[in-house]
Image (cartoon, rainbow, N blue to C red; front, top):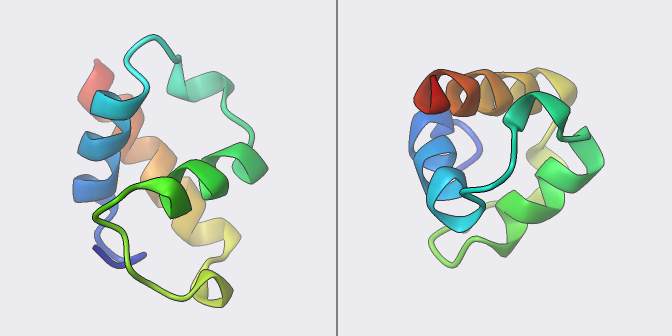
Length: 64
């Protein structure tokens, strides 16, 4: 997975953190959780606020 795979990342985060409300996650935590996903393989330097917003919104959409 790459940073641009926001939906795939969101699905993986749903599975990894089922009891978390994605609306309450700080971007610093979100980034660490994405980096910890076993399927994730991208450069942390390529991450930015817009990417994290897209991942968080996709996660929110998945939960709802």
